Amino acid sequence: QVQLVESGGGLVQPGGSLRLSCAASGFTLDDYAIAWFRQAPGKEREGVSCITSSDGSTYYKDSVQGRFTISRDNAKNTVYLQMNSLKPEDTAVYYCAASNRITSARAMGVLSIITGWYDAWGQGTQVTVSS
Image: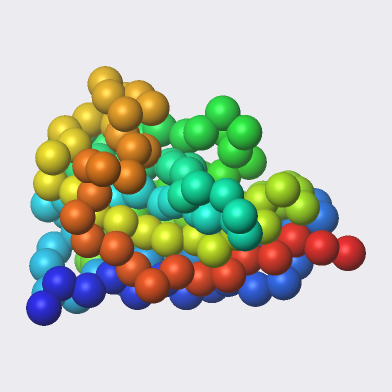
């Protein structure tokens, strides 16, 4: 059974950091593009970042570029999202998702973080940035 499980969310003050994890079971993450999405109350789900295994490339939404870093540990079958310099507007439920239709995050750019490309989703983890 294909399953993605996010963890690492929580409450953090503005300027703080969190590291989210996305652990896969039932399939090998290395065969897929993995992306992080987020959804704030009353807003649509939006793509945050993507990493592809074919070329090791990444893509970031403009508002998180330079603050967030996506990475993968194939030995642990896990993808991470390191989030630094967090802002209140980063508050959302964060989801990871997998796709076998995205070959290069660099080449596809913003298309790599479109929800329609992704078939497997985790249950989400809450991130709250507040003083």
